[in-house]
Structure formats: structure tokens, C-alpha cells
Image (cartoon, rainbow, N blue to C red):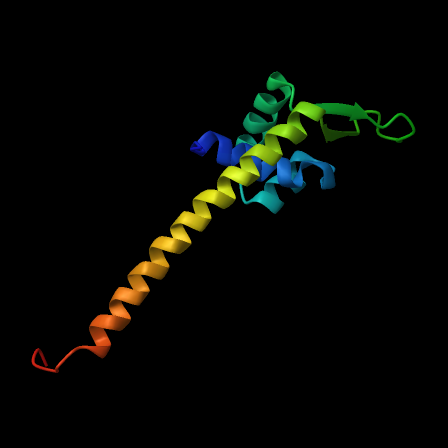
Length: 113
């Protein structure tokens, strides 16, 4: 499975969204601008991956928090698994390159110095 840049952004936001009380805090945790977080959150809301709950007892009646829906949790799991597979492949490629370089170094006769 490929992870698109958009899906990577979605995953980053989904990993932090339930622990943050504002888009500003979420932006700081994820390393995005508040505008980008707003864009991603809107997309997640439209896709049904996230829902917004208002705090009824809060003094500030505009206070709310984001929650992953069941579909959102399923998507987060799928994206996380795909991302891990990509990183495993990248690790294997790096490991092979390292082994080749070590073999070249160990078998170098010193003629190119």
C-alpha cells in the first residue's frame, strides 16, 4: 500500500488529535501551521474519520474536542500499518547498502588512495 502525502498528513493529525484541546496546540504538536491543521481537520471531519464534541460544562461554550470515529480509528490503523511497511522497506534498502559498502571497504586493496 502506498501512503500519499495527504494521507501522511492525516495520520500525523490523527495521532495527536484526541490529546489536543485546540487546533493551535495540535499544530504545535504536529509541526504544521494552524491553517494546515484546519484544512486537514476539515478533511477528516468530511470523511467521517473525526467528530467534534462540545464541552457542555465548559465556561467557554465554544470549547470542543475532537474524537476519532470508528471509521477514523480503522483508517489510522491501516495508515499506520502501511507507514510501518514503507519504513521497513526503507530500512532493508539501507541495510543492504551498508553491507555492500562494508564489503567494499573490507575488500579494498588500497590502490585508489
